[in-house]
Length: 123
Image (cartoon, rainbow, N blue to C red; front, side, top):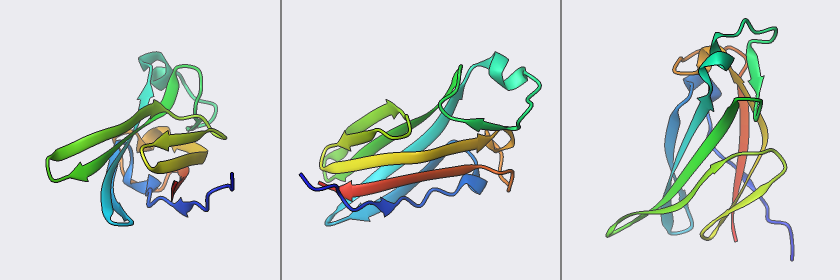
């Protein structure tokens, strides 16, 4: 089977996390939600690096994907994300090679060094 050609998801790390956006792929519209789940002790620790490389001990990025249907939203995926893994969500393939989130972008907006790269392809 051929490797899908991924389109870059419109993730804006400077907008902070949690973050949500809608995206039309083919004739369908999808809702994407990203948030960081981090243990309180991870957030309170004096960081040597203010940017979290995710996943990390006590912290990870979560993705939720739903397809919009006339009858309502159809949930396709809710997962902790790991770099290098291809996720299947209904007719979508997803990958997240880079997940670096600055502590200041957790519920905060601004340029603090966050970089989150995700790709999507129709299967």
